[in-house]
Image 1 (cartoon, rainbow, N blue to C red):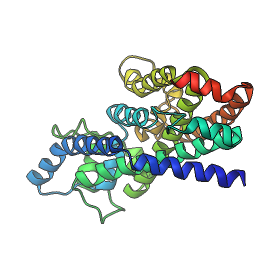
Image 2 (image 1 turned 60 degrees about the horizontal axis):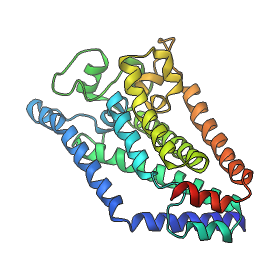
Image 3 (image 1 turned 135 degrees about the horizontal axis):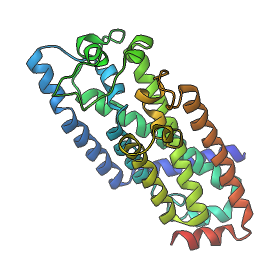
Length: 288
C-alpha cells in the first residue's frame, strides 16, 4: 500500500510537470542549444559529402566539459522546486506517512532524470543529421578524430579516443553515455532533495551549481584526481574509459559511485524526515 501511494504521488507530480508551461520553455531552449551547437557539424557533412555516425557523435559530444555544464544546469532548473513540487505538498505531508512522502519524490527524481536524459540525447542525435542506421561502424570522420587528427570545424564539439572506438560500437557508446548521464542526473537530483529538506532551497541550488561547473574547472585548472569528486565528470567516456590515465576514475568506480551515492542519499532523505518531529512545519518554513 505504501509503495502504491508513493507511485501515485510520483504520477501526480509528473502530470503537474507536463502541464507547466515553463517545462516546455526549457525544452525549446535545449533544442535551440543543440541546433546551434551542431550547425558546424551539419555544414561539415555537406562540404565533405560524408555523413557522420550520429550515435558515436552524440556519445562524443556528451564527453566534453561543455556538455557537463549544460547538462548539469538543466538538472538544476528541473529540480529547483524540490521538495515541494506542488502547492498542496504540505497537505500531502500531513495525510501520508513521511516515508511515502519522501519516497514519492525520490521516484519523481528518478523518472524525470531518465526522461530529461532521453530528451537531451535525442535532441543532439537528431540535430546532428548524421547516419542513424549504421550502429556498428564509427566511420571515417570519427575514426580520424579518435586517432588524434583534427577538423577545425568540429574538433571542439566532441572528444573520442582509440580506447573507446576500439572497445565499443557507436550504439554501445551511446547507451553507455546515456546510462551514466541518467545515473548522474538521479544522484544530483537526490542530493538537491536532501539539501533542500535539510537546509533550504538556496543551499541546494548553490551546491547544484557548484557541481555543474566543477568538471569544467577541473579540466582547466585543478588536478585530474579531482575528477573522482565530480559526479558530472563520471559521465564523460573520455574520462572513465581511458585506463592508461592513472589519475582518472575508472568506469567501475564511476558506476559504483553514482549508484552508491543515490542509494545513500535516498536513505538520508528518509532519515532527515524522521529526525524532525514537526516535519510539515519544517518543510513549510524552509521553502517559503
